[in-house]
Each structure stands twice: as C-alpha cells, then as structure tokens.
Image 1 (cartoon, helix red, strand yellow):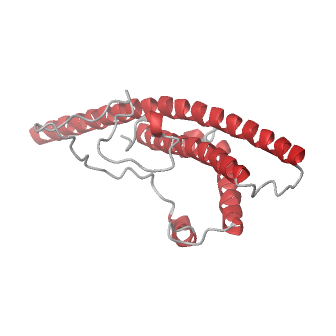
Image 2: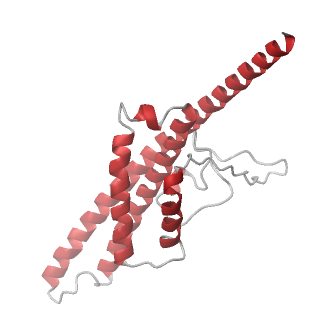
Image 3: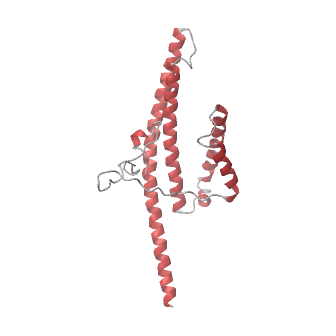
Length: 210
C-alpha cells in the first residue's frame, strides 16, 4: 500500500487516509460506515548482517530526520548512496544473486525497496526542479543585472525544470510498475509459506502415525 495515489508521488508532502493499493492504484476498502479504514502496518525488513548493526545505528543517528541539513551532510548522503548502489549492482548480478536472494521472500523485500526508492527518486526530481524554478524567479540563482543574461539563465532553468519534471513522471510510472510487481511477489511469498506449512503439517502427521 501507499499513502498517496500514484498521481501524487511527485508531491512534496506525504499523504494519509485513504491508503492505496499498489497493484491497481485504487483506495483500500471502505468500512461499513463509508469511511476509509486505517490499514494495519506490518514491518517487512530484510535480515540484517550482525557485522553492520553498529554502522546502521550510527547511520540512523547521523541522518536523523530532525538532524542537520547542509551541503556537506547532503554530500555525505549522496556519497554513501552511490557506494551502496555499486554494491547492489554486483549483489544482484546473475551469480551473486544466488547468495543474496536465496528465497522468494528475499526477492519480494528487495522489490519493495526498489519501489520505495523509485518513488523517492520521482519526488526528488520533481522537487528539485520546482526549487530551481522558484529560486530563479526570485533572482537568487541569477544574481545578474544584465536583462539579456538574466533571460538566458531563466530560459535554461525552465529547460532544466521541464526535463526534471519529465524524469519525475517517468519515474512515477516506473514506481507504479514496480509496486504492482511487489504486490505479486508478496502473493508468491505467501503461497510459498502456505505450501511450506502444509508440507510440515503433513510430515508431522506421518511421524505421529508411525
């Protein structure tokens, strides 16, 4: 589920009730009184390597939502993200994936991460484009007295905004597709768990009869 319809995934603000199904972008079922019900959120984390626990705790502290916001901290976040992206590129390759994604549950969890990351990228593209446009209109970026030069900068910013908005729209569409894939992957995982439980129950019954 998502707290916004797909059309709002590039919005700067989070959503709320109603929540929306990822598979078809429809709101979740309404309660008997016609009001949309609050979903029950269930954590679905990937297993964590014990060797990285301390590092993860430190990351949570350094990049807390109520922490500092400045160019240097942004640079640190981007550098960390790029390093992890390189690792993920290798970890999901045809051979490494046999080790990092051994079960359907692991695959489903990773698809969920990809969906959330793609939604984040859609929002960041859209918001950075809007930020540039607003700053240019206030002449904070241009800082030019020459009207011809200012017009040149303004046109360039308009182009940047348009390209970033196109990218945001494409990313939102990609997030819709990955959201549908995630929904289906979770169904596969649930079916696998049912089969495993049935097999285990059958084995227990057979052992009890012997």
